[in-house]
Image 1 (spheres, rainbow, N blue to C red):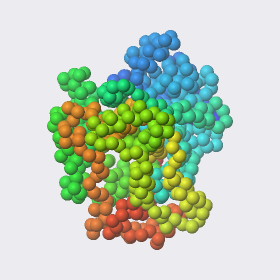
Image 2: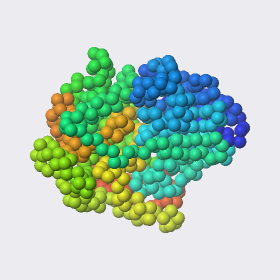
Image 3: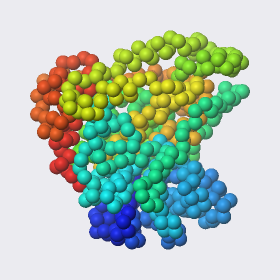
Image 4: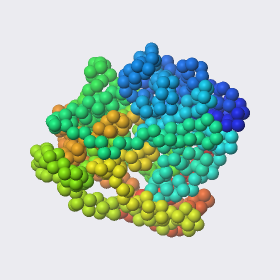
Length: 610
């Protein structure tokens, strides 16, 4: 949640301390507790502090252990006890009360750049090694924390806040047309290494960045394991292993005084809430855990109020509802807090989420989500063919038996599921839009890119290809960034227990039959913990599309008459955009709203340039 910035003048010129202070102060909204800078000749680091763990109550950054190696970081290190034991074996002492940033420094002193091999959690940090005259930075495994950088002229600029980089006079406002093209096609940039600005790049998840002269060097330090399989002789061991890891993941994210849960009435977020409640109850009889739920009472048929209320009542925790029926399309998109650093296609949800975050921020600084269980516990049509191909008939019979006693029927063998998946893919995939300008389409070869990226990728995981593909999709880092304060402008840190490294590896390694069919593993784990109507509730999308409903209202008809900016004309032929009102196909509706969302962003980004 804290803000970080790093400046290096690669030509050796002294850092402009006034500029560094200005860039640091800009991020005070995400670090209200302290703003500090450190400079040493051509290197400068800045940090804005938001204290979200017990160890950070008296923390100061940038910090150093020896006066030579300095860090600025937005980091929550998980598995602290295990890391401390490993460091103590290497001769490091006095670590029990060390801050997370100090633990990273200790790890760097012991393992150098390989320190990231020993870190788990959510982090984006920059180290300056004065001994080696080297900069080293890293981003966490799943990209929960943002990390941006620009290497322009004789400057290397790094931050976890995109708009902070735009303050630097060496960084231009020129757009990255391919990223804009991706937004118009898919609603987000498909390239994990670029941003919407030509000069600003992203460090992809599970990557490190090193500079010691010349150009920055990027390296991948972790790849999700593919093919690892966990087998137990007892069915109950799978459930116990899952519960143990889920509790550890939630526990590591509860190192704070007050916590909120972004809780729907579905299985995943309620499981996180129940686990958090159980852990906090064991710690103390007095704790502050609250749930926050967005509901619809009129616009669409919605049962989230009912199901989330059942969970809150069973757990005995307060629940705060935000009723979303009366919000309008693109509500408040001209206001500063909704002017995002990059284009965002959330014409309805943006204002709703912003108001919910304000609601949460009035109570706490940390909120938990239920993201991650859906992709990791996705069933697989490849598992049975995999076992048969490798002649694992004993495993197959065992899994079939467990499936039969748990679900009362045998699982699909794979072929019908693959056909169904292909048909579903054809049904949800939007048609290629007709409204691109010919010049842009030809220059970027957008149709070829569309066809290539919409192809079914070759399987990486031998028996869980769907879950592996969904878990590692570029969608997730982009989603995490939309929860970051650099986008929301709200001092809230959202943590995602199901994206805990230890838990995610476990979920992708268990047999999908029966454990990933209808999230059987999670449902068994939540027996006697969640109310039965919630635990047994079928997985279902929102009962209706709020945007489609709003487009039927007369006061939304203006969307078909919007005036394009001059910049939009570089990308889109306005006259070729079909009407949005009265449409029933959500896929066509979504892709044809991308130009309107981009138009809003182009119009207002210059008004709120940092």
